[in-house]
Length: 426
Image (cartoon, rainbow, N blue to C red; front, top):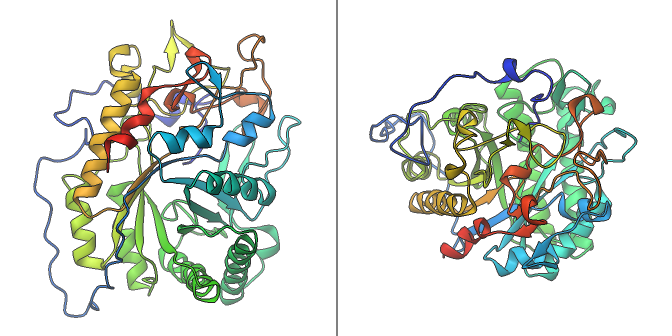
């Protein structure tokens, strides 16, 4: 998920226009049509064998949990301080998502941001393993820059900038392979690995965004995942992560450039006005999932999505901390309608979405940012400002995502029923 400048230029980031009601709570912008049938193409190779996966994966990101705990924030369940990994497992999860970055964030607001760094990821992965949770791991070789006025994503590392494409691919292969083997030596073997985050938006940019170049570089990463699995004797599924189902055509772009050595098409799904993902020509995820199996031999999963359990504002003021929220769903412009933003609504919406993904042969759904807590220590005034997240001070201290969490910051960070969609899905 990209972090946007909501606090600086909200009117430039999203259009403040009213939206009409939709017949579907999951697909507000979907055309009312049947899914297209792919035309046979004699020049296209036979689709890869469809991966056999018996488990339907259900989970959440957990990258921020231990990071926040170390700053003194707490997770509660029924009034008692609890281990959030234990709570996630007990409420139906079988997997959590973590992210390992090659580059470190610079220190921001005097705080070291380390949730995506090696030591933290190893710690988090061991917490997940201790609770019997599988791990979905995003390996991010590029990095993001934040200034007081802008966010720049998918930057190529400084020490890789001068490399030609083949040498760059070799460095990428080595980093992916070495990282996975090092995790294996720590007793950690992810079940699913994605090389890159939302790679249709950009990947190892070096002054260009070229789909064929991205595909060729991804091949190095995917081959490293395969070789790690072979050399370490483990089973791992490899994923390509696409933002927005409407952009599913990037799978064809990558295929034409020879990028097919992976198992899963993982999707970010953020409908509504402020991010604005749509289904494109597909009616729903069932239709899309079946089409991807038929056309490419790939199964889908939703790797990022969310539904707000509370509105982003009360009386026009932001809730939780001083940082503006990035995403309110059902609709940014509907944030005053509290009836649409409850833990029960979150649970129901995610359940329906998971069922739809599953009906299309998809293998799972993982929510984004649902472990978030506001930047607020107990006994301190609202917006105390620890600077816990990845934003410069000019953006406003805190979390942009706590309104989508499974922990209710309006109720002392107690777990709420939104998380139980995972218990509703077999």
